[in-house]
Length: 568
Image 1 (cartoon, one colour):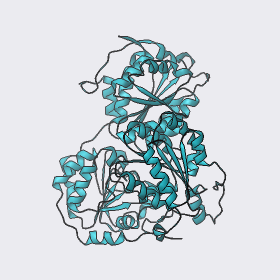
Image 2 (cartoon, rainbow, N blue to C red; image 1 turned 60 degrees about the vertical axis):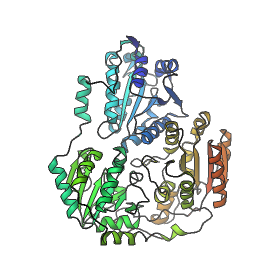
Image 3 (cartoon, helix red, strand yellow; image 1 turned 45 degrees about the vertical axis):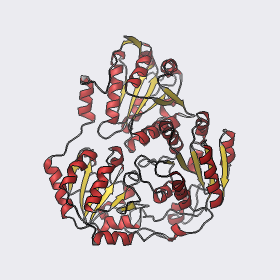
Image 4 (cartoon, helix red, strand yellow; image 1 turned 135 degrees about the horizontal axis):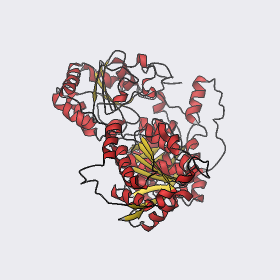
């Protein structure tokens, strides 16, 4: 059949199982938006207040479901406003397809109005990207983009389409991706080139099992790859069968139940004393879907210095990149762990487990401090009210670390945060995407007052679509994490981190038509949260906490992870 390029875009999205796209229209992408209007009964579009919010919303949609998120924007500033969102998804291996439209082909490269080389700009932060100049290849490019985004180690893919290509008439033959037996030659080549998945050999599995079976003090270091590959059950089975303690990264927080007796908590800069001591004293560190980020390892020369390292990951580029390994198994984590499990010996808890339990008692005194509102209360009470199925999103900063430390995550894909890029302004858009994707679940968003200033415009989106997101603004009147560093390492010179000037976030919420609450005590917070939950409508709860509250433990940069600051 003959369709316009714009209609082919929409039909291909529907063909790929896309139900919702996020975006913001503009001149060069009008043809696509016209087709979205005509197909509004088949595909939903969520209009955000800003393109960056749309990118983060598509990201949150993807993280909470495991499906490919889709975002659209026009050329020039519309496209460049997506860049931070694309980079955020790239750093955390999120499957995302970004569709931008550009000036007509005849005007490319001529500094035309709202023209920018978005493919060139995003090349370092995408898994692959395209300029779709040939109308005949448009459908294949879109199909290929989805394959690349979700295959192997997931990541974002960008498609830039000149406006004349969206207007061209194209021969279009629909396919069913679920039953299609053959990909085009282009798709096959791209998958070989960009999404190759290695399968571990029997010898790889045997060697890994032998290392685990011989270890007296093994420790599993669990990263976000476990969540991405849906390998949480296989990891739990492995840990429980061999009684191996498990520490988790920020991105791996929901991969292993924090309530399980084998869980030692988060590892790294703001990790627990138990996790960091365990890394330093173990004789085998089993890294699963983790990339040895500097926020985990600190001084790599002294990280797990007494241990062999077994690294299990889908991406061969991660092996030996930051930390030298003793052995590696490259492959899909879920399938690899399933093959590994039968070869691992069943064990009972021993002296190593007893030592871990002792270390778990070593917590900063501030964790027990009685304050008007302690961050621990903001996390534990929400879980008490909503249970294990609520989806928690955060911005970036102190509040993010407090959520990671205190919220008892049990189920995968319930914690959505920017890990690798550390993007302030990420969370409100991500909460929108998570709530759109999971309309029957509670979505609670924790934001610092600094971060929330960067994206509070998205309250308009939350109100317009009546999304029952509950936003908890943890307001300490400062850029808390930066101030903490200034306090500890810069002689308490608080350069440009004090935020002792508006707005009143509760009143701001009301200006957008959203219920706003103020809380200065624990009792006020609990009542406000109870009301927000019972109303099942959007809400903003501004919680005022101590200006000098710190995230502890904290490993100073360059120090070994077993030498954290526990109190100040």
